[in-house]
Image (cartoon, rainbow, N blue to C red; front, top):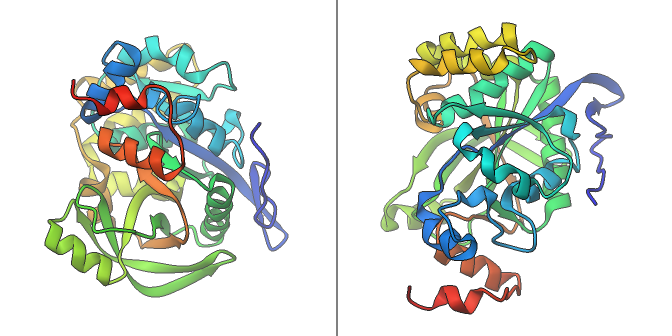
Length: 328
């Protein structure tokens, strides 16, 4: 069962130094197609199931694992999972009978910018002072309680410094070319889990030579776990992807009503596609910081090889592993 953790007390609301502040919400990104892992999910489930709905490690789907991890600090009633309408058939089995979040089904994939900003507008309509944490649903994290405690400490900082958006960086173990990297700059703040550094620059999927330099320079893997005030998140969308923001902003009036699904379909009908990292974070007008989680076993389960490597590192040997390792 999910456990409750504290960072100066985390219980759905953050209290920092005794001062009660606004609610903490989660956005879980579950709308991707996971095409690079199709060969593996096809072998496991007999269909082209997106990886977040597949059981790759343990006995739970990646989505269920993510939701259980989030529930250590943020209750399901303040968790919004973003999916695709075409994924509805996978949800019942992927949720595994556990507590369900609020589900926002996108009519079609408009990129990660829409995936982040759609729930941000929805949350703002319910709780305009909310702090939100964005979680991808296709990651493996070994030390879940420690990770969520670190996230809680960052959320407490953001409550007191709402102008900042803070990303979580994992300490790299190798010059990975398929991950995004973050180059930290000067220290700009401190939480009870360590310092925050201004983000100097992002580097997406570098060459092997550049990845080696980034590793040697103390750069971090970008987990895309992000903490921000919902108003700061929306302001970044307004500044960086104004056309998308304008369409998504119309949904707020219908959030939680019988017309919500219709409003989302209308907003997406002519909405442009955009990547949150390249279109928003790269040009964000507000200050960006990164926090390093040291000693974290973290992996983006993006390829079959990475899944196998992660299982081996954790001493896991599911019955299907030998079959997957054989040529198709």
